[in-house]
Image (cartoon, rainbow, N blue to C red):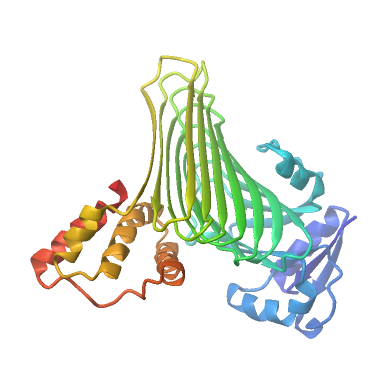
Amino acid sequence: MTTVSIIGKGSMGQAIAKVVTDGGNVAELVGREDAGKPLAGDVVVLAVPYPAVADVLAAHREHLAGKVVVDVNADDDVRVETVGRGDPRLGSVYTPCDRVSALAWNSYTDATVVTVPAEARLAKPVVVTVRGESIEGTSFGHAFVGIGPYAKAVVVLDHVGSATFASNVEFDIGEGADVTIVSMQDWADDAVHAEHQALKVGRDASVKHVNVTFGGDLVRVYTQLEYAAPGGEAQLLGLYFADSGQHMEHRLFVDHNHPHTKSNVEYKGALQGEKAITVWVGDVLIRKAAEGIQTYEHNRNLMLTDGCRAHSVPNLEIETGEIEGAGHASATGRFDDEQLFYLQSRGVPADEAKRLVVHGFFADLIRRIGVPEFQDRLMHRVEAELERSVGLPPASSVRAPSQASASSADRTQSSGGDT
């Protein structure tokens, strides 16, 4: 039996408490009057309006040390549950892929389940915030996200704070659904995070999965995608920025197990500082039955300083020749001296020229995410990374001295990803 502390005594808190108790567990409802009191729960759930989250965390900070808090902000149409291990949905998409994933599967107590109903058109993204308060001790988590047939939704997993955290997340995407999934690893510098994200794409469904990693000491995300029926389409996009001493690892496995399915994988990363390490491994399997499929995977890495190291391994396994197209590519390099010279010869200072090249490298991919409220946040994070580790000052008002020169700089920015 597990005790779940639910912060918030409103209608959402009461509903979550009922789900917890119906599952044979104990629910502890915590209100404003309980600020500062110890929390009895092994799991803590926030059932408060999003603007109040920061104040709630501050009021209970002492008793949240060593815990990972999960908060879900969603439309009223979206069902949010906390369920026990016996729920039949858990494990229906996911199979452990390695020892850490298996340990997380065996160690979690309760799971967060988010359900978007069939044919829903959500007005705002579903934001699942996973917040750690301390790296002391190891926390385990599990989540299940179900997207109903013909629904359209944006789901954001936002990982912040400090934690040692291992987790698994399942996405069951129904027939004809259209979903964008953004997983942001924006941890504090001391965090350690390993996560397995498993997706099952229904007939004629479309999914855009975006993996973004900026924070953390060691972060490894394994993304696995398979198709439940023919006709599914998947875009797997990713960007990462590793600083001195950081280890960022992204592994993907796309299983074309049905005919007439499509996938496109594109990951871009930048590295700077001594012992900054990134690992990208992209595996695509085209099974014998998967005739008429299309797939392509591409990884690019931009080395900003000496002393960093990027590992890039694209793999393509083909069991049938009856396909429309398949390919893969990988490129790793430094700043293009010709691009920098071109910009500087037109009056752009060296620091600003480097910034334009880095922006151009990431900008196209960030625009393709299609979630405006998070696109601005990502560009600000790129700015912060450049300022902190390379020493580039904040973006200045310096512009090329003429309109013609400015247009040339814009063209160079847009092609920066081809270095």
